[in-house]
Image (tube, rainbow, N blue to C red; front, side, top):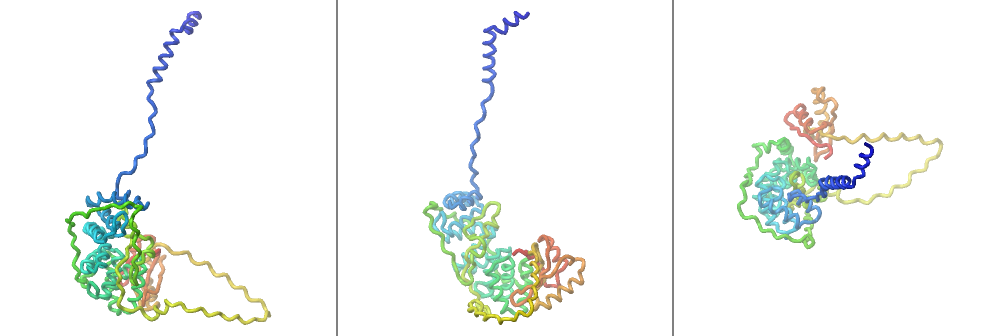
Length: 413
């Protein structure tokens, strides 16, 4: 038996068969797959935004063009931005207006504001005001600012101090610096009844219910019908040869893009952030309020030379100076939301209103405290903090004082 096994193990023919079989089994194994190459992202409005941010303006415009021609409002708005700035295409504000209009009739909020501003600059004021009102009543702060100045001056629409006050209040509440400056000037000249009516309008706008019927300025709504004219031809210019960006338009009442955090007129909209990315500011028409700033404001703009303090008198060291107590650390910065409950002629009346409200609503005001600050020629009463806007809105329903109106204010603004 051992001899047979040894002969079998040493049989060269059997070894050859085993070797052949081993090669066959190895050959039948599949080869390892080659690593897949990364595919570029598909064309989209968002991808065009990334190209724009990288300075590849011509490629961005080429990517947006088919989407714009197929009716995408963000792409239409972005084409308007490109033509307004002259990046990737030859600067042409008439074509920019055309693209803005196509997006505006589809309800694109920044496009409505930009269209109104460009039309106002082109002195087409009647149509400009229609678009500005459409955007302002939906909360667009640049449109609110311009429309407030329009009603203040009576230039392009009926002169109305309540409407001017209301739109400037709403734009200032959203943090627009130029609106705050204009509101401070208007507050010095406005009559108490006009201020009260303006506050009522501002509250209605903040709550999304629009201008009350008794204050409607009689401005017809804009034509929200689709634009049927052919889309303007696009001649793309290579990024390296693009025309330089136009200098910022400046005037005493124009918006300051740098102060609005972003140089946003250069930022197009994208698919998911159309209103946020696309609402970035552009220069507005030179609309100077007719009322001159008060004397106190004019004087404050002039720097007076500092007087050199005289040396303090030398004291005899008869006893040591008492040690000064260290100042307490500042309280932590408050965050969240407050509710604005009205404006009052002085701090005393605002505090009296708060004490009366707190006494009548002890349970609802627990954990809240008043903040009374100067607001133009008056003092405004705010109460907080609330963690969220929804909680602040709920607080308004409970704590609103009479017919003063109430709306939520972001403490961080």
